[in-house]
Length: 206
Image (cartoon, rainbow, N blue to C red; front, side):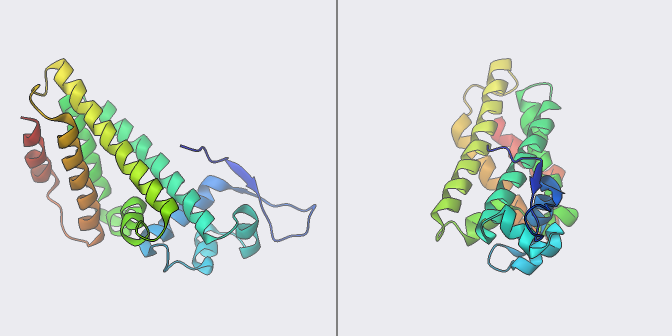
């Protein structure tokens, strides 16, 4: 995944008087507004307010709104990837690692973050059919997430915590369907019974 530079110079000021800003903090603001409103409903004004930048600074750092969205998407998926890997690392074996990953999705699908939504799910629904660039990004991210879960299942089969007859790839695909569904349910502000749902999901590994 492309690493985004920590610092970027952008300003509406004349050349020779650049203003520095923290790119990660600015993109975190963009992520929030894109998650909440989606791509089309987010205006440049919304972005400048969320990123705490002048309009000129946004256009100097990014060509247009679409470029901001791509950078925000990359920032979001990088952070969620780190969170998912950290959740998996808490497990002592493959089965526990899968469970921790699923619980992480439940946790991020609740409360204010759940109501804000997921930029990957939002992009899949709003942009995949009309934006080839975003379709490729969404597809790649979902495949990455699926492969990660499949890898954990295979780890569990290797350490004996998951039966060898479990279809690692098929089960991982079903779990991805579930995790993305959790984000939709969270966005809709429906209550989630996390422990119960995860208990049902873990039966797939029996």
